[in-house]
Length: 119
Image (tube, rainbow, N blue to C red; front, top):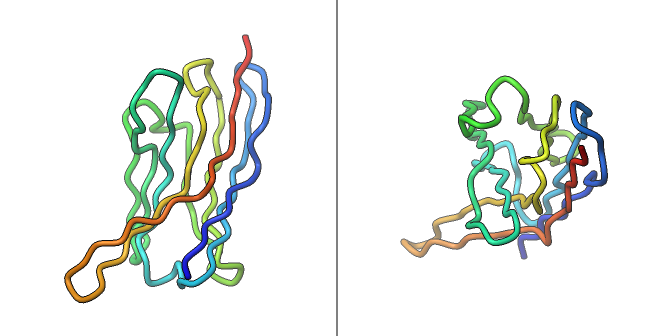
């Protein structure tokens, strides 16, 4: 069974930093693509950062240059370093992965971690 558990959220002032962690079980992150999404109140969930099994990274335009996604394969953990935080970064942040088994797609989500940026 795949489980994703996020941590590291909290309250931070504008310009501050946070580092989110997503510990995975039931999968090996070094052979799976992993993503971070966020959902602000009243808005749709959006992709923030994505890292492939090969280590290729992609970011939403709104976080480029401020956020960095990485993997710690030894700990089976995906990290999201967030710097220069803005009020508009306030949201619940979710870890995600997807598996395709015998042609069926399975999406897995963590429970989310709240990030609040105060001005």
